[in-house]
Length: 226
Image (cartoon, rainbow, N blue to C red; front, side):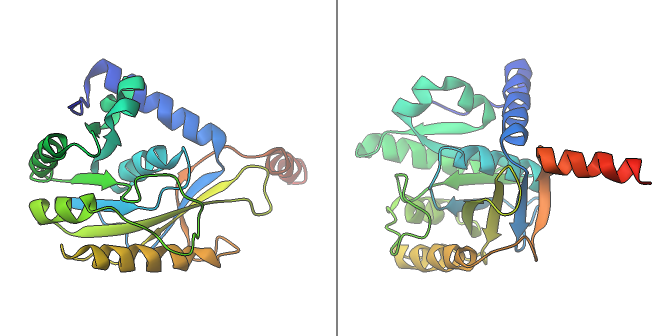
């Protein structure tokens, strides 16, 4: 198993690089719903549609003040080992001994104040708004061993009237551990809440990204006309 290795010089470099990469690619990260911080640990589970999803959770965790960690396939984390510096730790799916080790490790993390252990329970990339989410049991087991609030998140990447895309995050209602069906229902409802969104009304920007050419031009014109 590969453990998370947050902190230190390399952790600071990785954190700065991911922040720069995210802000360069997107216009902003926008959140709707109760993004709670505080000392309470939490299990965060989200839909998985895009390569960027892990970085979105990293940026979201920073904005919320979480000590964020993320479960990741071991063969992928081994390829991109620097992600352990951001809080990624590994699991080998389909191996009982690995799953048990990861569960024990995650339980230890969830005993830390402000910890947020994040997981993508679909186990694979799927298009946003797929008719039926299919979750694996890992999220249920993590919740049972952690006994912390469970927070569903929906992530969607959208182009509105701007050059760069925006990232929308819908925060669902936190709930206690329970059967897999409870997670399925909560995450499905949270995803549906984002499906019909056509503007940023009701969202709060947590992370500002890069402005497009039109926005920069408008800013210059505004100053020249002032």
